[in-house]
Amino acid sequence: MAYDENNIFAKILRGEAPCIKIYEDDHTLSFMDIMPQAEGHTLVIPKEPAENILDLSPEMAGHLIKSTQKVAKAVKAATNADGVLVAQLNGSAAGQTVFHIHFHIIPRNEGLDLKFHARDMADMGELEALADRIRAEL
Ligand code: AMP
Image 1 (tube, rainbow, N blue to C red):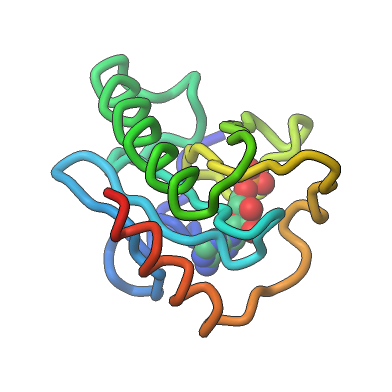
Image 2: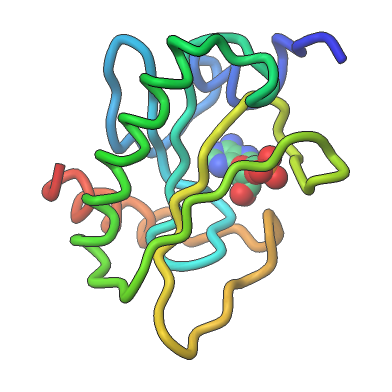
């Protein structure tokens, strides 16, 4: 499938759609997931138009995992989570719903189930407050 320049993450990268930004460098952008599966659910995307990991250049794969590691450490510290799930879905059969490659960073706590994937919108004020805490740990 050809990369769709109008997917929501491409719009966020172009500044045409909003996001609650956590981190940005020359190659990657990280922001809060607006339908979080747990408190602190954050996404990291490359600034390269790749639909999934099969399309991504090896150079950008390196940048993307470096930023994911950096943000995951900050998310874990900010949320005091027991663990952190890092996930990445390729193709609708794998559950992918936005077709610009991204890593999910999802705090996990003992005995607490994940919420449904991409279903319930978070309160934006709560997300902003969480984002402040995560940015403070970068
Ligand atoms: P995936 O199903 O792996 O493609 O995940 C897409 C993720 O993007 C889901 O967790 C959605 O909640 C999230 N999402 C969709 N639209 C937005 C948006 N505008 N801003 C932030 N996160 C979004």
